[in-house]
Length: 366
Image 1 (cartoon, rainbow, N blue to C red):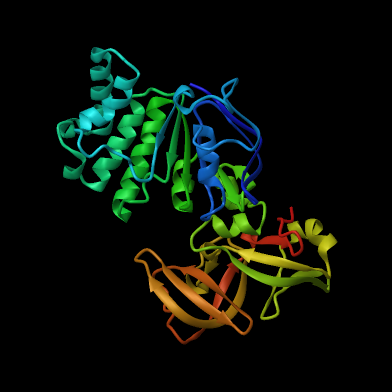
Image 2 (cartoon, rainbow, N blue to C red; image 1 turned 120 degrees about the horizontal axis):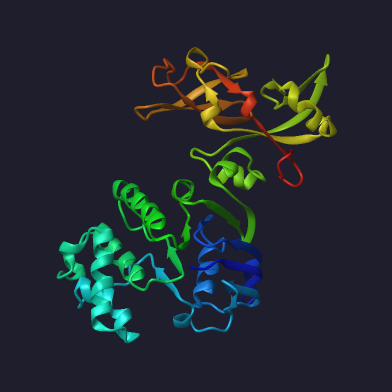
């Protein structure tokens, strides 16, 4: 098993900087997820580690070994691609065994590894079939199985679930997480789906325009996003944002958001005091915007009134879309809500879960 280190890694394609000065240390046995929108550099970061792209500047280590100039086949990694890349004319068994045959692994050892991997993935009954006889989920398992038999130090996965339907993706997420725990190997996973990242990763690295924005545990990214981008990217629906000015009246600090003003919790006022009179960005997640009639106990409510334009019944909740004179926001309401489209309704913002960001830098104010 092995750790992975990106040290001041930059990748350029001509004048385009795909990855800029990336520094991450990934301990042995960690499940790290690169997440971000299309074009943010996550797949390029993975491909440089795999040896499929050259590093323009910086160093990549697998364990203590510098691998910048090491051929892909000698890096002791296994990669699962979005397309699965199975050989259509080979059986599942032969697809899984092919890489081992090229490396001249003894036949008996190949047979042991293939059958062991098939048992782990529950595809023993598929070993004699061709890829065209398999469903998308089965092909995905075969692609993972082909990586497992290599017994590599590091598993690399580049959006391996993007071709699956929604229900199968949920199932496959669970299988890959269990596989990581069972194998005890370093996993590095690329996805644009923040739900995948939140549910699978022990840590998440959020990228934007080739620059690492924040790397931390899923819960820390959710509770303490480092900037507006991370706050808006992690969580679904995205965090509500409002341009605001911090003011103080009669000893009480408020975020004045033009359409409404909300009182800042007393324990946070000392932190925010340097920003009095300045423009900031006020943020609150939809799950912390409640129907006042069904608000959970223990919250610090501030009522904000708006017109309800859309409601979406999700079964366990109702998403309520509000419009204000100068903005809009979303609330996640209790399914018992009587909120109706076209009505004017108050929503309860839980101010104990609010966020403030510097207007200029967009960094969180701590």
